[in-house]
Length: 166
Image 1 (spheres, helix red, strand yellow):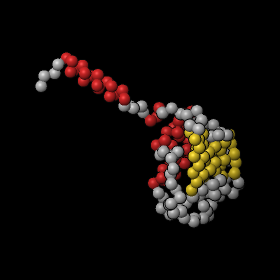
Image 2 (cartoon, one colour):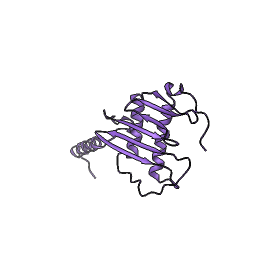
Image 3 (cartoon, one colour):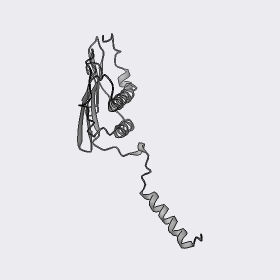
Image 4 (cartoon, one colour):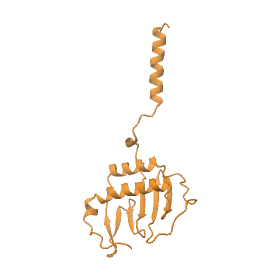
């Protein structure tokens, strides 16, 4: 098969055009929406809270009540959280109503309010006998966010919890 200069040039232009249409942007560089915020109420009895709308955190001290602190997440931390939310498509209808929840004492509660691009999504769930995949994703996201918050100096300065729930 004979390749002419014209055919070769056409092939090069096609490759450039096709590669230009492909999104090669890494996940970590997704643009963070200006209005991205969330609040997460979670943990035993839903006593802990992370709220980026008001830059506050509530820590459950168990026997000693709760304590609140001002904690602001950096743009990089918010971007990492946003990208994790996008991965699990948190703004979609996650259809949690059909899954069977269990009565567990003490109960663990999770309530989310997420705002992205002028849309707000609210998600709430408790304990499950068998965790559906979407709940496991949300639990991993909770743990990821809690890890970020608990590494902050403002959080570390809070008193340690005393006691435990039975």
